Image (cartoon, rainbow, N blue to C red; front, side, top):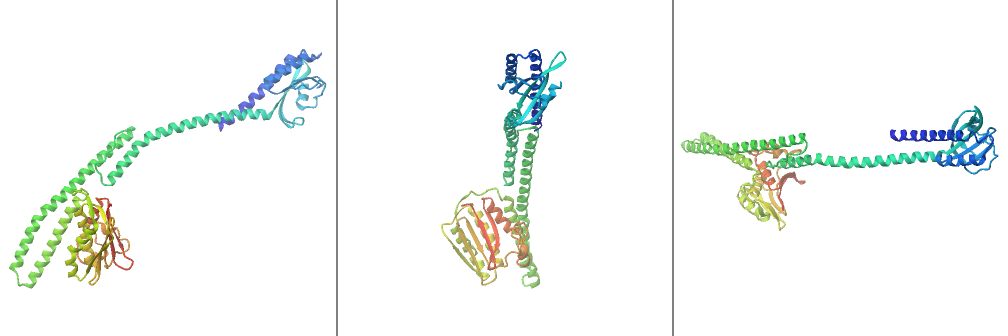
Amino acid sequence: MPLALSLRDRVDSEVRGQALSQSQLVATSASEFVDPPRISVLERLALRSAESVRGRVIVVDASGRLLADSAGTAAGRNYAGRPEVRAALRGNSEQITRNSETLGTEILATAVPVIEREHTRGAVRITQSVDAVNRAVRTSILDVAALAAIVLALGMIAGALIAQQIARPIRRLDRAARRVADGDLDATVVVEGSTEQRSLARTFNEMTQRVKRLLRVQQDFVADASHQLRTPLTGLRLRLEGLGERFRGDREADAEVSAAMREIDRLSQIVDELLILSRAGEHELPGEEVDLAAAARRAAERWAGSAAERGIELAVEGDEPARGWCAGPDLERSIDVLVENALLYSPAASTVTIAYGPGRIEILDRGPGLAAGEEEAVFERFSRGSAGQKGPSGTGLGLPIARELTRQWDGDVRLSNREDGGLRAIIEVRE
């Protein structure tokens, strides 16, 4: 915009300057042909000058009477009443913009005196259409705008190319970060781009390798600790069994030994489940197409005895075919966790249903369900929820194990309350 405004002022100044200089040139050339007037010479001067300035040129004598007109008007017409001519006949150059009553448009009028031997012998006037001047200005501005558009387009293309070069390493880093977030700690990025981007890529690769090493150390520690704890736990169980035999018949001692045995069993279960969690996500077992209907029926057979002891009916229902992709043992472990919880929290004489369908298995019970906001909290390790704190004892690791084992096969485990009371546990696997 500043350039356009400056260009407008410059073009206007050039048009005015050209008109004034051309008027002065014609006045100088015509000074010896005005008095006495030599009409043919003056007419040639007017025509040539009009072609140069693209306007109308007239020459008048000292009284304002027309001597020559580039437009072809006959001599004799008086122009002394025109303000610019009147000023020029007084010996002053004049340049004004005014409305022409004859043409019905705005004009730029430039008039200069014709002087001979220090006397004003006449005047030369050049008139130009302001519209023509404005068109010239607009043409120049449009040329500048077109040039600016071309420069802007080239700049945008260059900017897009530069942005692509800058953004490409960032996008690759973003994809690698997402892979790491999904559990792929082998993800790395190519060291490329600017100095800062290369430094960031190297730092990212070092970070993922360090996280991988730390996670492996943690998993190895949990696995080793679990293995090492089994030996003393087995020894402790044997000693407690010996004490039970020694104090058989003593009710108080027998009760204490039984309580200690239950704690040993609970501790052994925690050790086993910690070992499973430490290995979750490693795909130790191969994936395969699993018949979910058959898996549901096998789970019902495994838990039929426990359900009968608690006076709970265990039902199986669903729509076949029901297929899923995962490791069969991992799926059965997840189902067992959810069925066991359902049996523990369901009241006697109720029904626990194992339902199946394409890509899913649901366990439905009539237990207390979840308190508000516990849908995700119960999947945290050692978290048992409000129902677990009031109900039977447990390790708080079953649900995290079920979710970890399912998620490693792109599945999930979700819990929600049933509308008519109870809990719905859903195992989803990839079909």
